Image (cartoon, each protein chain N blue to C red):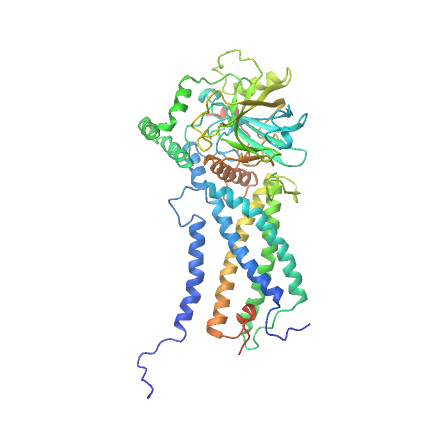
Length: 180
Length: 364
């Protein structure tokens, strides 16, 4: 199926902006909670786990939406290198939004922690408990978060570049303003 | 109207380019501030744990505080008497819950002599049948010296050994205590406290307050204490042996299990839940929640307690943290310490190497 509307499908647009807010909040919650000894640490941690699982579920839905509704093609005159960067960064974002919650979940499992999403809702462990696996996964969680944040910054800068400099309809295709 | 001449040529889209650079830059700055890298004044878990290392050095693979200890295992037999106040499965009548615990002494030196401090600690992890856990770390004193993480950090700084003498500067310590009158109750206790000859004869207090929630939805502020059932024979600590506590524990367990009663104290309205320096009045209602039975001990470098972070905010449904500011700080700092020691265990780059094998003669 080819996309001839010049727009992302409505479910893709809704998921994009909803998840943009969730993921950006999640990144700030994550770095904020591990850098705080105040009560902020406790309530940010309480949000972090269920929000992460919500992002995981939505990311899987979004991947299905992406495969079902192809995105509008990039402008034909976009330089090859920029096209490559666009595609690579999009798939990197998909990979990270699925990997981050899984690594977090596996990390808590490896640390022997009960994975509590609320006072009483507990997820099963998805990784055997062990200190070495915990340390590796815990560091991986931080490094992938940094990579996700940098990819997000590049993505946002690129979107602004398309919208303000090139004015080629790429940004418009995600905010649903049809090209003149 | 004639077209006005344009003597100054502005680069095209200057404003747009500035925006494209400024929005991500502002975002990155906000991230750096929230993450603490751009907030050098904020007390972070890293700075707290760094201070422990500054005071006692780095001992790879060991906890950054309460470094010297021993693993124990056993179970908790519930009496059912706490069940009306907390719906946690561990308190259900007749319930037996497996426990992996750890006895330790405070301080960051894993080779410190047992008589160097009068405080002992007991950490427990109860694993409920429903998979939820209750983790707790208790100390053998009724009150904590300070009420906030900031004051605790200041105390650690005051106790940092002077490089010239290798000992804390008594003037700095005195200045700290003078500036922190909330330490008075602890200091009064410490004056009479003697290093005990056994872990088995000590009481262990939760210090921080918690909130029990019953199946009726009612909330109860509580503190708890483990009360020893082993007789205190008043024997003095053997001065010659630096590791008499582990030896005593082994010897006692060879004769049979050791027991503690878990005594839960219910707060009256108005009792402070956010201040671990203040004991509650002695007449508060207490509930005998059950019996902790310790059956075996294992060395901490290979035993099952080694890889457990006794974070006191890991709690089952029916127990919640109170508004005590020490609780989130303990959780955050323990997590940092846990990551450091497991990273050392994993030999990750940038971490200090583990000691090959603790040699008794290598002990300072």
